[in-house]
Length: 288
Image (cartoon, rainbow, N blue to C red; front, side, top):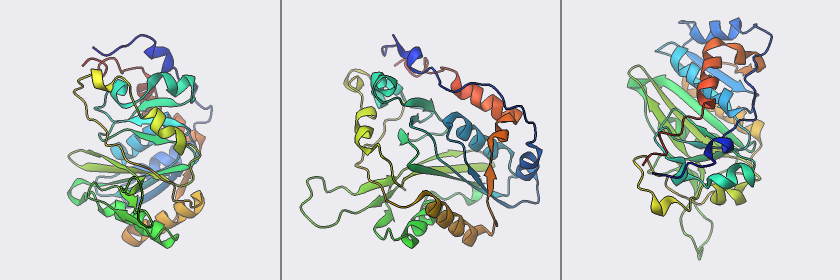
């Protein structure tokens, strides 16, 4: 069994479950659930990972089954692990909060562990399952990066966005990963979400927090992450958002994005989602 002493205090959230007093979220709910809306674009201006991941799950559950949705958001410094991953294998838990003041959050999709911060914009595309393609929307983001001058960006065989190194003689010849992806597929709806390292100031600590000294001693039933060297693409957040929105509109003619404010945190299903993510439910994952 993996060690568990001291684990729960490390997961204590800095966010309160206090719900905003305003109840004026009905316009958002109506837009999300309107069956005539065949394409949607939402951009969050909150950096709470519990809230943003719950908004994403709400969009997956509530948008019409024949619609396609783009959701862009960024989170404060946090490590996001996949649904089936063991945190003791994937992360150096003592350093997360004690050294680097980093949250640990389990998302609802599969895939590997990723690092989020305010220099990292995350994109989600939700679409009908029959239309799901693991490369289609990664290539959409790649085209946006090309138009911003990141010519070396390409989608690799793992459906991640990487940049080939310039010149020869590098000690590590592997391409630099700038965007990783994860997926959640249901009978009617499918979710592809990914990261994109724009201007993170924390590249130096990623290898420290996404490393576990316990891994050699634990035989886990979960999914191990594939480690890759990473890099920033060095583009502005708003330029990136505009470029991705433009590429999404080329595909789906969605129109202008809706910017989400704090009041969406009062939507009952989102309130429930935040509460679920904040529960320290990692005990099962620690049993190996």
